[in-house]
Image (tube, rainbow, N blue to C red; front, side, top):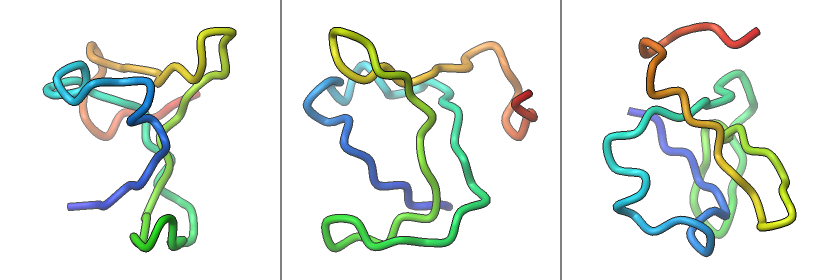
Length: 66
């Protein structure tokens, strides 16, 4: 399992994320964010309504991003 800390809680309710596949950048050095060691980063885009996580529900786990 990989722990990834992010700042999306104010933009997404937990039920909006359960069962969804997201794009994770995993080749980063672990960093401590808010007291948690995060071993990756969710890929998101900045929009006028706030950050939007890039979902990949149709992709297989482990798929490459181009």
